[in-house]
Image (cartoon, rainbow, N blue to C red):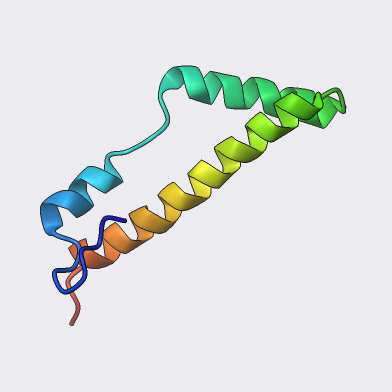
Length: 75
């Protein structure tokens, strides 16, 4: 997605990726959904919403890992 074939991930792009995070309103919603999930009262729609957040978080973690590799000098 960000890695252009033959060009790699640039340092400015890697720095931008590391700066990405969920907005506070999404963090609050994730927390609400987790509380409901732990209480066993999550609706099917809410479970799908929480799963979508988890998928996005996983993708973001993957790209941030790639970005850290670009920014960490190898010895």
